[in-house]
Length: 222
Image 1 (cartoon, rainbow, N blue to C red):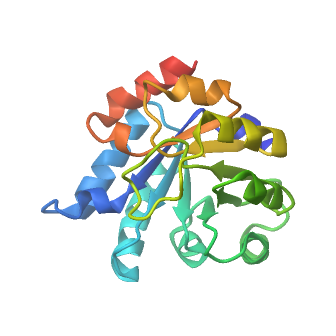
Image 2 (cartoon, one colour):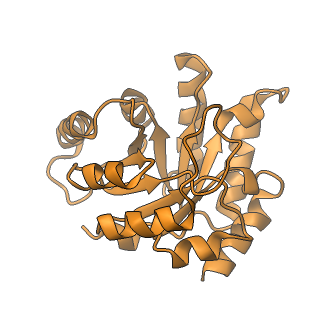
């Protein structure tokens, strides 16, 4: 399967932390996702680092209902919740379950339900330097995320920014689909793609006007 061809140029991340102050966080998360879809998003990642499992799963299942047959949906960190909510894959960090273990779990679960169809659940993996990219290149992952490219406020303790040169080095280190993340905006996304990324993951620059911002990202990146 050619995953590069399935990877859209814009990869929005829905960070539940952005909506905790809302009177109804669940409704706010789902409404935000709907605006991203309206703007043309076809792949979304759901990230919830703070809520308990019950609330995370509740939000995840509502997102699945909204996006079913409209967009692929990736769960951050939690392979178990990916399966429980019927997501299309999981995105793992350096300190999460290993991609090898996640692939085994997802493959076994998927085949148990759907048999040996051509589709399978995705596994993405975060890296923060070229050595980690090289290591990830040997793993059973469908795409590699690298960053932060620029300074970011979306994580409490971010790794050092790698800059555009870091993206270029990552591109040279792998032929796998490459997703750049960290501080990416409409103002700098084209340079990131020109440095070798296949897709850009965006959080903060979608918050203000998610539908319009998604449309503009897609227009800029062609």
